[in-house]
Image 1 (cartoon, helix red, strand yellow):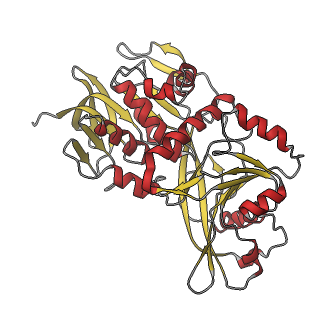
Image 2 (cartoon, rainbow, N blue to C red):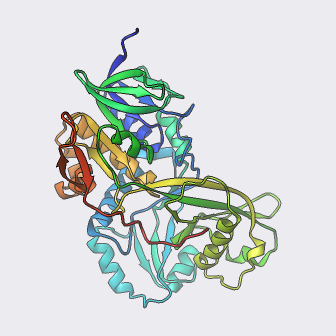
Image 3 (cartoon, one colour):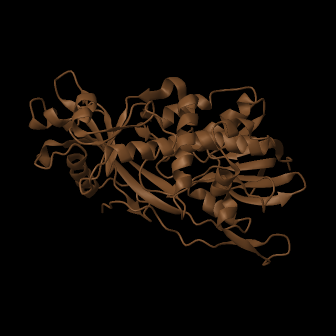
Length: 411
């Protein structure tokens, strides 16, 4: 029987997170093996051509706000030519009084200067963004084709070994570090260090080493609408992206005078159905009206011509799980990216590479990445402690009841 090949670092999962981490390690001179159950990179939720990226502004834990700023700066630097900067406008809530001075102070507290975020009154927003509504303008907000980005990151490289159409279903401690078994329960490779970046599949995989993660799926359906030439809707279509209750990208004018407009997305907690739903498209039509403040618009004018369905993976506290699984030396996690894959994957690449290579975190520190933020992302935040249920490995129980992000839901 052939002895399983040994690798210094194996990355399980070739979505945007796994691809970015693998590429970061390659750039730092490391040899990397990446393994994925699909035949190519980014075939699941990362097969998304219209992901938006901007710092989180508004309600949320202080750590979430600080982390998304850092992640945004890292993502902006990371993606280069594939970063489609078009600006994003976040309207203020209609049921709240907009205090421009107070919002400006809040942005300043978050270290978001005018180059990243700017409070606008309705007249300023109309002149700058074409949206007559007060809110926050994010001039460097962008969108990203996650699939193209992942494929670019995993181009052939002399230090990169790829196993496609290979599902890892079990891990086992061994003298060399960790043994990885495929779906036939055959030991495929061994690794000194293993990075698990497999979204929801991470939960079952770490379960084989007696670790429980509070992960749940969230189904999202994005709608691609066509609007006929001369339809009244055309006067309301945005030239920038808008985020709030849902989001939309800038409308694209086609050669025949019609427009293509991408609006999303539904938010179905605990569901992993990939079948398209008419009800989700209708839900997105309602969101579209709210995003451009056009309640009287005719929903029938938004003709669905396509969609994208993705199953996002979320943790109990809205933050991703990124970092070393210290109770299982040599295992690192990058999961629960939710709807911020473009941001969290850029941060995960820097953080996990630093941990894998035992760095001093000097680069991250320059971005304001403090020790409390490392702890906020660490897998250990969910673990009450080890319960000795097996001689070699304890079981780690979650001490956090999952609390999924609040948001609209479409059935």
